[in-house]
Image (tube, rainbow, N blue to C red; front, side, top):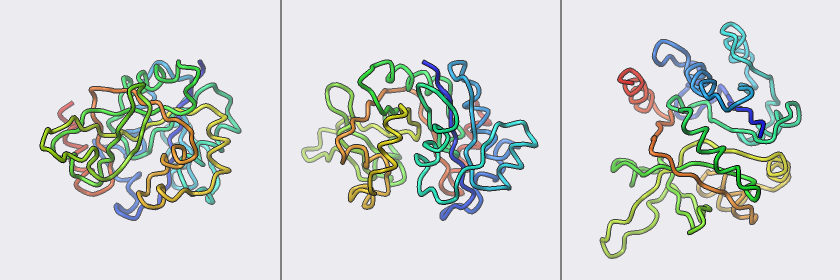
Length: 239
């Protein structure tokens, strides 16, 4: 399978202003993510997909491949879809631009999930750390016995009614798509659950499109707040 990595990169951010250009480990956050994704030997190419001239210029200065995409896109998935119409591949890997701790192992897990010809959409999960179980910024996922997602939520799922302490899984912000799934996503209206949780992957589930989930032992820290930025920087510094 030919796979390319796409990093949707908007400069606007409501919780952490201009976060993709904030420095982490001495480099802009978008550059840390690009180099992390580029470290995977399984990808034919890695592309930053942005609507910001400023991000585009930073990428040019550092020789990070980037494409200008429409400012009308409402989600990263729509931005990946635009790239899929310009760059041919079997699989498109979507890594959010605020995931600096992406590892080659994450990419390998995603691609192993997509080896199943029935998989149109794939993602990854890891066992949730104690501090993430009740954290609404850490999305949880529950799956069926075949490894397909039943639901994603900012709430703590499953609910521990009898105090048995189930295993909780944290969803990581990486996806794999076939072109047909992207084509379908962009013509579907925003779904009710997607609006409620502010989780765009729920649009697939509400429309009967399965999301296959692979498990990884490697956690990640998505950068949404100043505290996340400092935590990720410290973890990267420690290796």
